[in-house]
Image 1 (cartoon, helix red, strand yellow):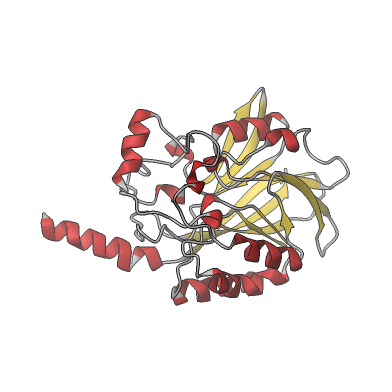
Image 2 (spheres, rainbow, N blue to C red; image 1 turned 135 degrees about the vertical axis):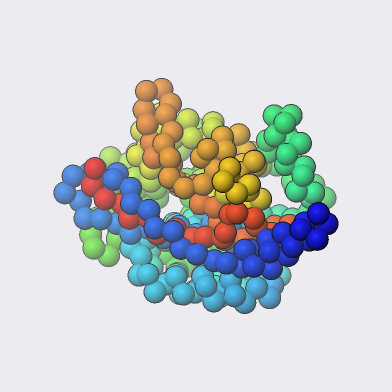
Length: 299
């Protein structure tokens, strides 16, 4: 039994956590007659200095030539890794993009027993109590360097804000985004009011898919919500799936495409399983790291 456990750990850390792959998903969400839009979603990179294979794989995604890149946060897991994140994403910065940040962009990770997630789920505990408690006793990451580089490339920052972006083939997209709900930085009142009527299509973007956020976006009739944060469960049971989501989202929607309904409205929801992990728990099991090419098509 001990040997089998050791083999599983070796597989989860040595192979699966480095087995990067691209998923492709079609979403029938655009207005009639609109040309399809190819959106590359990258999330939860959690870069640690020295992760050369991850950097090369992320750079290679530029070969997909997406119409839009959406980065749903948690780029860092090492305060010294900002140059490596920017090197990895450099080729993608040539394309139109939008981004939000997650807690690990702002703060360095702390060691945490993975089993704690199971205990918190059983107790109904998610996220942090009070305002931004993660700020106490942890290292602050140099996230401003990420923001400045993304902004300089023309990517739209969406921390409790709205934005617009004109794609190369013509349509104008509207974006509404929130800062990370996992550390209670989301301020929906600042962006409430629904999609921008003077655009061709609107997306809602957030790092952590907490139900209060999904309810708000869906009630305001956003057709599509993009999120990350969950790592797809990270340590999953084969033929069963995820045990936890690290938020109050149900495990049936821990990754991939689903729907969310609130106050009589329904939105598509896509949750990326991400391509990294906290530096102190660098393992994945039955949940390989990923990015997703979303092809948005007319309804």
